[in-house]
Amino acid sequence: MKGKATEQIFKNIRVYWLAFIVYWGIVLFGYDTGGVVSAPFFQQHFGLIHPDGTKNTGRVNAVSSNVVSVLQAGAFFGALGSAPISSKIGRRMTLFGFSIIFCVGAILTTVAHNLGEIYAGRVISGVGVGAISAVAPAYVSECSPKDVRGRITGLFQIMVAFGVMISYFVNFGVGIHEANSPNVWKIPFGFQLVPAGIMVLGLLSVKESPRYLASVGRNEEALQNLAYLRRDRTDSIDVLHEMAEIEAAIFEEKESRKGLGLKEAFFGKGNFVRFVIAFFIFFLQQWAGQNTVNYYAPQIFASIGFTARKNSLLASGIYGVVKLVATSLFIFFGVETLGRRISLFISAMGMGTLFFIIGAILKTHPPPASDANTVVSDPPPASKAMAAMLYIYVCFYSMGWGPLPWVYVSDIFPTRTRHFGLALASASQWLWNFVVSKVSPTLNTNLGYKMFLMFATINVGGMAVFSLLIPETKGRSLEEMDVIFGAISSEQRQIDISNREREFNRISSHPSSSNDKV
Image (cartoon, rainbow, N blue to C red; front, top):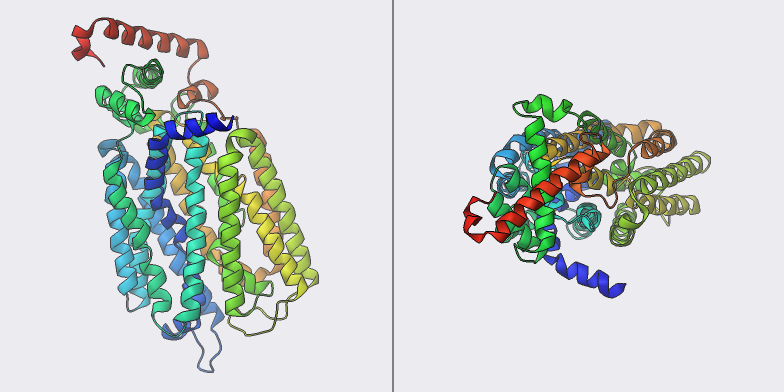
């Protein structure tokens, strides 16, 4: 069994490499955080302190939410704008172009001298990372074989978790060693150029999606790229069968939906329910509470009793490590075992239960202080218990509602509408990410323990129920999704595949006609 798994990894090593390169852009998704605003020197430098030396809580909350949310606003438009560009020039070149745009924004943010320049840089960076978050999952999904697609696509969330962890420890390092210098925000902002640069250079080493190439009529190149990714010959039975599936699905879509444009993309047979799922799965994910903890971890840990800045940053860093390890374990060992629906259900119930417990403890054992810059002794036992609950919470998040929404929406769309589906999903993610990040500092200040109870209710009452209503996609090919969602009958799909296979066999038995191959 172990030997078979190892052989499968090596057979798909080029797909893993493609995902590794493409998902460096997703590190930016996780890395971009507003944690720098909690640094005392940042607050002093940008006038967030009262004349008497106390923190202007309202102003800090506003700037903190703005630094995060303006990026989300840019990302919303980047995600939507990526769809027509991706369908026109391909997944690879779209990612390359938007990576350059991100780098421009990151440079502007790093050299900024005032909040306006920081906001402008964040918006430009947001356009880049929004488009990357929409196109990257589609690109990887279209290149992945069905038996490991969930695992490879799920690398998305591992890279998000890696970005989160890196951002916490970069903030921790500069917060300790550069606490009284502009480097306390310049280094965290500038470090974004490292993963962005790796992605820009790495994209030169990967090939375009075979499914995209087939969808625009470049079938010969599609077959060659598919064989390259599968490390097999172009005349291999397995490669030809997969290519036949791809061409059959595209042929069906084009025949049944000629000249329908955007209307068919959203309202074609079997499509509308997929767009509804894509929108609401990310609406619910953003209100799970995870991103509130991600973006404002130092403030959140301060609110439960980790009141010294060093304590809150270190607790945040440990949270990032736990998230990365838990996500990695689930992606490599659980995503193709448990299935999508049951994983989402267990994840939602676990998160909701732990948030109820945290809210109850915070109500009955409130911490003595709530300022991340206050220097106090060791956090009280109740605060340590709540921190432990947050660490367990992120394990549940990492086994379901963290990685699986991206895996799921990458699964369900046909080739012709996948870029629209992923763009809508990504736009929904960024829209609600913007809303949540904008209101989270105020929620944390005004609601206290009630914020955790609110998120708990959403997890149990909304996300767990939603998990049971969607169809299972584990182990099904992308081309089978049309059958699952009722766009075509399984009988008609099998007839179409057989027809394409007969065409391939005819071409193989008559080499002289290879120039006519589709």
